[in-house]
Length: 442
Ligand SMILES: [Zn+2]
Image 1: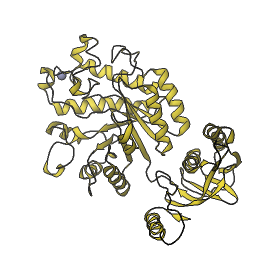
Image 2: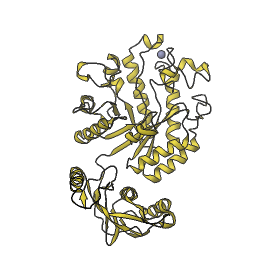
Image 3: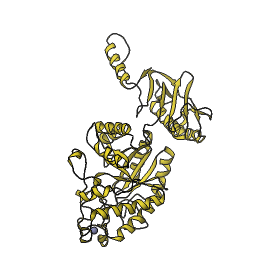
Image 4: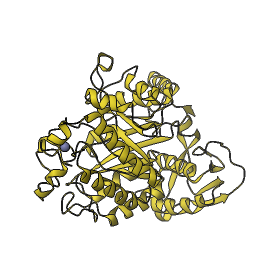
């Protein structure tokens, strides 16, 4: 048995150093991602996975275990022996997983904890050895005690015009497997709206029926889906350098809703804009089955280019607009999430971090309601301090940190989130949902 973390690597080093003197093979030890808080595992001592004894305070866990063990292992699935007796953990999403001579034992307080134990089991189990075809499964002797260190462990998923629904499903399934609990789904002009059927590409694949299907999968796997509509910049719902506009390319009569400069921003002074966005938010909220959060984007907006917006205080317009969106979301029973970059403008103290705001939007930030959650994105390597996170937190906002595809940055931001006690992490994927980049992100 050996413990992962530093000791694990010391063990591996010793194994390497001693191979010259004995016949013990150098091995790749079984592992789990993310690495559990307490984790001992054998590389060589396995038991047959023929039964799982599951103790859980939530009786739904039995049905869930039976359903998914069948999905994973088919006719070679282990039997489930369920008990609602005394549980070995106190954390809501915590679990223990013990595998020894007497079998496989899981203990969890909630269904979510039981899911996490079974995802760990799935990561450790391998087919029986010494045969040509699978005829059963084995699992290494292990001793795990684990629970999540943050409440919000999310991933942000983009649904582009080119994205197939199965790709989104795969990202959701993988997020669950790695014990995340939220997935933000941003439509890039692909949502099929009944409120405004002209809003976005006419052949978008993000239909209400498809969302319902994905939500059912996500709910079952322990992931809550969160919708996103960009209510400030990114109104084109296409990349700026693509020169596309998912709405105006299809029907240009809706130009007054957008700023004249490429239609990138919504026109905040137009009362029709606000009415439309509020209706779209309500529709999306219904389509996503009343989620606890709603993401309103708000990153990378331009300065206004229309005479109506330019002739008044943009700070005031910005604050009133965001407040109106937040009021709508609050009235539905959810909390608003927004990107951070328009909420700060360049100052020496933000050197090396992302600022896209003007003095006006940065002043406006201080007047925003404190129930808004600020998602602070930073895509670089590791930093020892994250002053922007501290700044938003010091003004009474809940904060998420959002890394992208830099492994050292992802690690450092997760550690900082834990250390500083913010709400959690919302990782981003953007257009990298395949290959090496996706591997690093997940
Ligand atoms: Zn305007």
